[in-house]
Amino acid sequence: MTVHLRMILIILTIIAAWIFSVNVKHKKLELKYTLMWFGEFVILVIVLIFPEIFQYCGYILGIRTVMNTVYFLGFLMLFVIAFIATVALSRNSVRVKLLAQKVTLLEKEIREVKQGKSKGCE
Amino acid sequence: MIKVRQSGIMNCFRIINITDMGGSLRSIGEQLKKMKKILVIIPAFNEENGIIGIVKEVESLGFDYVVINDHSKDQTLDILKRNKIEYLNNPINLGIGGTIQTGYIYAFEKGYEYAVQIDGDGQHKPEYIVEMLNYMKESQCDMVIGSRFITKEGFQSTYLRRKGIKYLSFLIRILTKRHITDPTSGFRLVNRKIMECFMHDYPRDYPEPETAVAVLKKGYKIGDIPVVMLEREYGKSSINFQRSVYYFVKVSLAILFAAWSYREEE
Image (cartoon, rainbow over all chains, first blue to last red; front, top):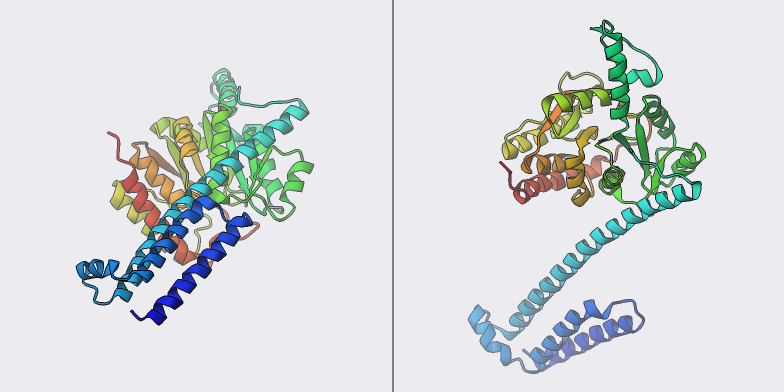
């Protein structure tokens, strides 16, 4: 892996980390969900500075060049992040539905209390 | 037995044995009590034109009902308020699944013994509800589906949809060994046990076939009776051509997952 390419990738990673940081600062992103991205950036930068760490890793996986190992690991980490995000999205979608349903039922109850009636089948 | 058709609240007792007037009066009284134990759930999304008609029809039959406005963009909510119709109002759009589930939660919490869901677009005739209830009691079912395809009368849907429904029926038969003639029908009567199941778990979109499988796999019994459905009077179908591919894939997968998730109880 050439120094030139490594420098470009390190700069790109730092820019990405900076974009995330700014968004966290402005409360557009929650730190909780951003931590895994920062973890990925740190690992990427370490690999790019010391590529020999992953030479052995690539050898085991049958990958010839360090660059491909970096891409492969990057893909794996993105997969994990996407999975966690999908889990969080699904969970939140269920929670939003539950909350909305509670609001719907409470709103009717409040309306009935205001009108001085509460109807059931009894 | 002589068939007596009367208007208003008497409509629901379409078959009265007039040789035993005292008995039939008693049974009417009992039926009235029973009817109070049924809640008709009417989901409404942009149904400003048709909602009043269906509500009046349900009211005239003497059933308790609740219309659930799923954050309609048209005047549905105003109409519900103005006409003093019993309604629930979703603060955000929850889709048909979330809306119907709200209805089941409401019915369960209010202590209703049975809940029946009918579409807000005039496709389903509420007069079948009593027949559905009688069938539920006779056959000891937990859920009764109003099916278009038993006597094949009334609006039979388009050719492609009929094929799609046949395919879903086939898939359900393979997975549950039971035949459901109209798995996509949204005209369903359920008892409290099923209400409780639906309170905890109900899919968000296109829920009908999936819930049928879940109910069967949990060991409950589903029956169906023939009903005549009308072509929707107002509004448009939620399933257009673009969505049909999504529908096909989603519902097929959902049925498989439902069959996998719930082990059949002996």
